[in-house]
Image (cartoon, rainbow, N blue to C red; front, side, top):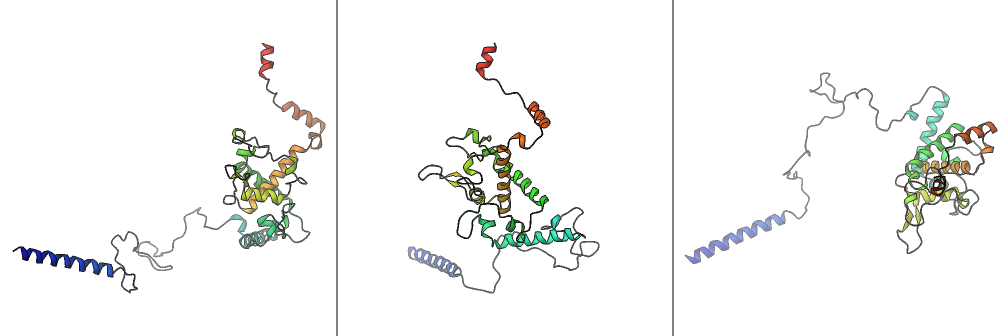
Length: 281
């Protein structure tokens, strides 16, 4: 009797071993024309329509539907909608050409802020940036758009640390532990300064500024290349140059005497120090 039980047990073990071996043999990854087994098919297989085919669901029998009113097609932009005037057609054609240039990134100056020898470009490469021919001037309206775009991006990405004036006194910058954000109004960052090249500022915005070796964090300022494209980076550089000029220009150079008096009167009174308040009391 015991011998029969032993035999049955051995037979069961042998059958189980063969089943396991067969299962493993079927998982060797060999090619097959048979469809895979789908134990949890989910939405792998579902009914669909071919383009331009007939539909039994919609009353008009059409599978392809008209978009709802007000929907904007993906990839459509107003500046690429060709108008009837030569100016509108020219602007749309130049926009397409600039997008192609952005894809190819063939200009070392416009997309990396450097000359062919690796040095920083001194000024914003407006020719490459706007797709202009040699000697052609930037339209005033587009130049203003560039600066306005730079102001918009500056207030999003730069203002928290560098402040509205670029003096490094933003809401985050004033609470910074350590050296703090750079004062963008310093002479060394202006044109003609040690780091006054537009390409240098472009490079710092996109790639960041490393700290001294051994100091933590490794970067004093992180790069924004993943959040700000090349054109917006140049727009920020243009706006920073406008900030520098506005803070370095005397009031007398930009306003008449009457306007200067009006601006001075409109300034809020300077807050009194605590010592002055104690003396008055």
